[in-house]
Amino acid sequence: MSAKLEFFYDYVSPYSYMANSQLEQLGDFVIDYRPMFLGGVMKATGNQPPGMLLPRLAYMLHDLDRWARHYGIAFRSNSIFPQNTLAALRLALVAKRDGCFDRLHQRLFDAMFIDDRDLSDLAVLREILVAAGLDADAMLAAIEDPDIKAALKTNTEEAVARGAFGAPTMFVGDEMFFGNDRLPFVRAALEASGR
Image (cartoon, rainbow, N blue to C red; front, side):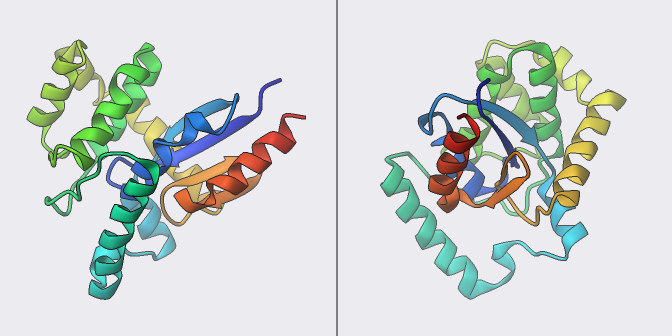
């Protein structure tokens, strides 16, 4: 049986973008992508976005550029803050349900951290869907489905119940890892659980 990684993330999180770029390089295992609403996680845990503290924000912007260079990936800090990613996260769940997640997921991260787009704007989401060759009308309608809304709420509440306080949060079994800088430990846990 393949080892499994649960990846709880939000498209608004730059460190989720960084971690996401490396997941498939960790080895042969199952990735369960678990969109969660980071705003809800932070509210439930009393956490605050890094941008709320100016010295932390200045450090983070430098740190993100450093990680992007380290990983060899494109990165641009998004100039639009704050953003409400509820619709984008629900779209990811619709795409998972409809079997087209792979066609949409990276495009949403790229829109946020390469193209400087506003994922809280439904017109932007429509453009992304159309560019991916997906049925934008049907998928945008589906984000209002009570089951999709409930699935995002469930993911968010489950992440908090299991100890999450930010993004990305990853689990291998019951062991939790926070942040893209924990990927070596994630790899070790996956290798151990796959034996």
